[in-house]
Image 1 (cartoon, helix red, strand yellow):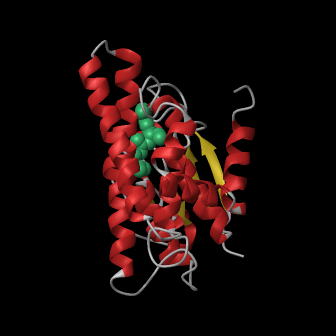
Image 2: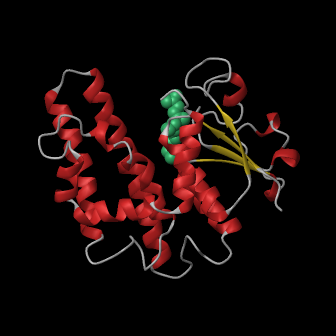
Length: 242
Ligand SMILES: N[C@@H](CCC(=O)N[C@@H](CS)C(=O)NCC(=O)O)C(=O)O
């Protein structure tokens, strides 16, 4: 069995949990180190972690299987022969894991155009879904700016509509199987109740089900996957009081 990947995570933040789903799908062994947010001991902005990822963000993995690399941001401070390749960015980690561990292409495609379509959805997830869902919540919570709130909720709804249209007559985003592109959307989608709170047309689950039926069925289809159930259970266990 492969040596365990060291995985820096956060108990709530959605991005690291995307990696957990891919570990579980591919049965890749990993050991989790939970960090706090902020400049606190064991925090993502603590000097110890900034030496590993100057961006101060999780997920970050070290995979001993990949051996030496010159990819470390502050390479002189990391013993790369012992720790393996350091990688950040949840979608890059997903791409890495399928390259390294998904020899049968269970979660990906190696053909054209499918591999570019997987990439397209991963970019949409990372560049639009995650940051816009995050902004929508920040504006809803912290700023008395109804125009900005409505604008951001509009982008969230447009993202849902984009997925819904793409899934018309289809089961998954690319080809006929669930790939890392589909899996990448789950964790932020699970937070829609708070992102769309107060929205006149899509705040409620029943409203979203009626507005985006393809997306609704797809999201629930993915939630039935054993690896996704395991990820959700692991997150519950990591947050016993919530
Ligand atoms: N684009 C990055 C975003 C990573 C990211 O923002 N992670 C959050 C947790 S979900 C984080 O580490 N935040 C640190 C902070 O807010 O201080 C990815 O997909 O991995």
